[in-house]
Amino acid sequence: MSAWVFTLIQALLYLALAPLLAGWIQKVKARLQNRRGASIWQPYRNLYKLFAKEARMAHTASPVFRAAPYIVFAAIWLAASAIPLLTTDLPTAAMADVIVIAGLLGLSRFFLALAGMDVGTAFGGMGASREVFISALAEPAMLMAVFTLAMTAHTTNLATAVGDLLVSAPFLRPSFLFALIAVVLVVIAETGRIPVDNPSTHLELTMIHEALILEYSGRQLALLEWAAQLKLLLFATLLVNVFLPWGTAQSIHPNAIGIAFVLFVVKIALLGVALAVSETLLAKMRIFRIPVFLNMALLMAFLGLMSHVILEVGA
Amino acid sequence: MNMSLLQQLIIVLAAGVMFSSFAMLRQERLSTAIYTFALQGLFVAMVTALIAASDDLDHLYFSAILVFGLKVLLIPWMLHRQVRRLELDRHRESISHPVLVIMAALGLVVFSYWLVLPLVQSEMQFTRNIVAVSLAVVLIGLLMMVVRAQAVVQVLGFMSIENGLFLAAVSATSGLPLVVELGVAFDVLVAMVLFGVFFFQIRESIDSLNVDRLNRLTERTGDEL
Image (spheres, rainbow over the protein chains, first blue to last red):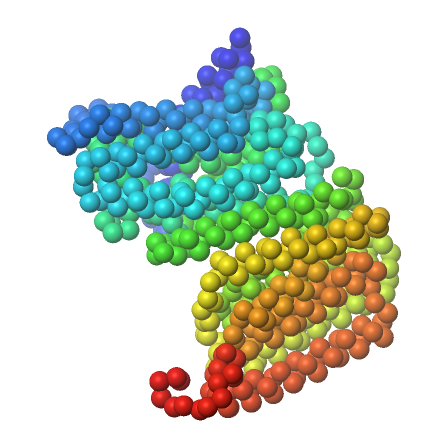
């Protein structure tokens, strides 16, 4: 019973921490650019403000447009709550399969693209086509990289894989290095961070995610913004807990959970700093450079797979 | 998997050699490609030194130093100097069908793995897995000489073939005799000097280092340059 309670707590923790990560990245980025920047609590205030506002609908909007924010939010939250955040010993671990998570994210993207096209504005359609274009290229690289991990752990279940990595002796694996690079590139593309999409712009011709949600307002916009922040936290958690799993608890003992929480926050904060630095250093790419970028991710994933087969299996 | 930390490090560096081959194949900028070649040489030198450390083979230290001096310092320096004198430092070559080329290279890796499979099963040394990597590096070097049109990049492909052969020798038979190694090193060096002369010759006669233009027999002026 307490395991289920803890599952609920962990899922709520995802919701609570997601805006904080977004705020932290914005703050670090602002400091790097010699600005003071907004407080790291600003995303919470934005969400509060949007929830209090009235939601307006275009009169051409269909029920799909109304339902999409709830479906998107629920799918991403469900996917997030399946990924082990603090402990691998949870009832939801049974559904923490990588393919399920990729499917849930695909579902959310599908409805987001539908909602973008629904109202019939040019920007929505353009944003939808670009979003689908990027994710169609990113998904194979993501799955390849994850299969590399799965070949080492002999399972596609994330909780089992992380648990395996925790108990086995630390081992320098070239395949993990390649898979890590591939996953980082995919995460940047999937969450719409800088070389691929700029999350803080409303410049009409370059935006992707912002173009999709241009017609939303009020609580529906708040839900979509929150879902985007949740997605960022989901991928960040995936990255740190799969590639740097040390510290993640294997039971729900309070002491283990406490240590896991502190280490998790430190790891995520460092990842946020790294993301902010890379976003400050890099410029946004032209959209037709993105296939090259994602091809590189796919190549990395392939190299990871091959170096696993060639270098690690016989050894 | 029960390998010492040193052996794990060797495996990671061998993967780095393979990766730098891919990076060289895909790199459009000439000077970055030369840096990537130097990086590959560094990885090879480090693998050699670490194998020497883990198997107590003292003569391999000398090979490592030889590779470091030649492939990381001397040859990249010579290439950089020539590229600067040919005023190609900012040159970008556009590769036709980059994705196909990369896929072909991946196919070559699989092929070389399949080729050395019997060898891997017969021998019990841990470095045996690196033989497949070094064969792949040789084949990718060949592929690079086939698909890239720029003469300097073709020289890089040739040099990385030599890297692959050296890595194969180190990982399969714990190194060549010193005389052979020195001979090969001087061969490579002489080849490098000759290539340098050829760069200027080619450039003088066709006003470009794109060797695809070498197979034109008649000299027409105007639109082709």
